[in-house]
Structures are given as C-alpha cells and as structure tokens.
Image 1 (cartoon, rainbow, N blue to C red):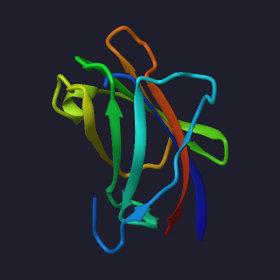
Image 2: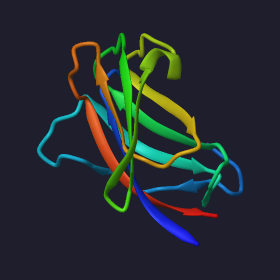
Image 3: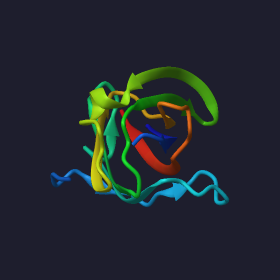
Image 4: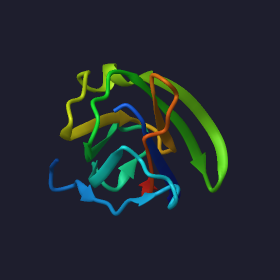
Length: 135
C-alpha cells in the first residue's frame, strides 16, 4: 500500500546509498526572498518505509550567518495535520552556520512538513517536495 505525503522545510536559521533518492524541491512561497537557498535534497532510504528511520539531507547555502533557531515539524497525510514538534536547530546541525554552503540532516520515522525559523522567528526558507511511503 502506498501513501503520498508532502514534506515542507522552512529553513530560517540557518548524501548516499543505493536506496537514496534525489528529490526536486519547490519554494513554499514564490514571492519570499529566503536567506537560505536550497540546491538539493536526498531522502534515504527511498521509498520511505513505515516504522523505519528516514534521513532527509538538504544541501543549501546562506548569505548571512545563522546563530540559532528551531526546526518546526508538521506532518500531513493527504492534507490532514497529524503531528507537530519543534527541535533546536543547533541540535540538528553545528551553530553558528557560516556564510556559504552547508547541509542540514534530519532523521525521523514520519513524513511531514518541516518549517524552520531563526532566533527572531524570521522564516529564511521554505520548500516542498513529494515522496512515497510503502508498508
């Protein structure tokens, strides 16, 4: 049985096994000028299996140093909100993040939507992508 989910990352503070997949990303807001620009996303393993840890690695670049913030995770299935959690961005990666290229890696058993905000609650980037979950 396959389920489709949408995963949205909003980066504001701020890959690869045979089963990994490179995924196209789209910015959540086409009008926003995010400080973090995403160049790629890897999902491993792919397809995602229920009850197994999945790692999402986002290759990105910033034109300003990032000193702190949070990763806000919202999980949706078929448009229905089923889970939320906040994580310290500096627990997910080393802070401060210097100007230039960096990678954010997050592992979780759930699909979802993941916005991140900086220490001032400023949204620096938001992307969406699709993936499948198999049982």
